[in-house]
Length: 292
Image (cartoon, rainbow, N blue to C red; front, side, top):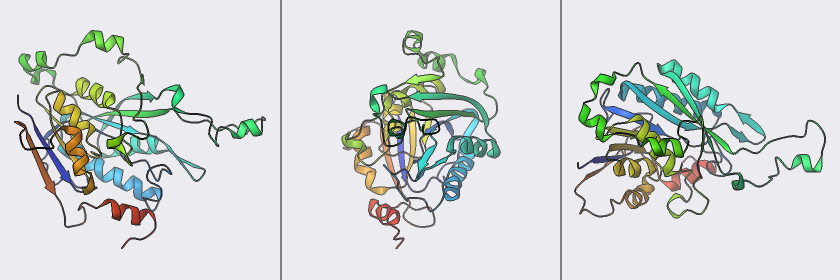
């Protein structure tokens, strides 16, 4: 089967290019709120950040088919000594737009990923009660569902083509609420300056929540991880990405660098209006306080 893939360069707070109930599965990881290591100062305040999540969730609910799943990879964030309850707030936002909160999976990064930081190291300098601040190795994958799924709506042929390898399921602990997956390490060429999640995460979720030949949506496409994995698993995909400069990276990661592919790869550039695309230069100027 030849699959179809589309990248829409524009803000995912509007998904006007997509019709109602046209998507079978959504998986994405929004930018971390003003994370010092990736998005320092990108959002003017926390309410603005939650507004982006809310608009995206409303559009996602509209375009997702009845009974289908949205998997949201998100995490609380410590900014300038203040902890923001992003996971809890995102759950409430999704519930308010109509989604059902179905499950939560904890993604655990390798123990060796972190060393004692300035935050956790406070206790070493002051080994007394009340000086404890832990470093974080965890992120949440929140599973939301829109209504109820009709299991009889899938043909026997498609069911068989989409069958999950139960040996893989058991051997790699997919059945647990804690998934131990190595994160994308700093210095990865295609993820420079992008907080990308690992392919294994996208692989598991796409296998578990979509069928052969269906369409997967990534509202925050980033470097194209979801699209790459969707293509490999014989799913169609659509991705929204606000930063136009990432086109070359997305093409390379998804192996759509040339025109000799039998599969369809389409680019749409939303270069006007409130929800148009932006450039890396604009992002940097915005983070530095220059909005012009």
